Amino acid sequence: MYLAMNRFTVPLENAAEFEELWLSRESRLQDMAGFVSFHMLRGPEESGSVLYASHTVWENEDHFRAWTTSAEFRASHARAGDTRTLYDGAPRFEGFTSIQSIDALQTT
Image: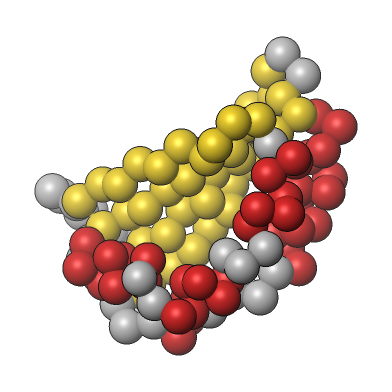
């Protein structure tokens, strides 16, 4: 498993617009081989800003790398420059490879 995350620091006055942007955007992730799941997370509010993290899970890093060079990625991020004023600085990318996985037990 590979987890790819981008963190965004969003001024409180832009939080509603930032959330609407993500909730209304067309995602092409589900069209990609190796894609498992996506979550947009709202974190703590501190000093007039809110921390957000986009969080994708992939079968492996190669599938994630294929996404970043795909036509689907370019189409999904075509308007990214238009929205940079909603958050402070550049998104901070973090990538993680799983070294252990423990799943919830399923009972019938």
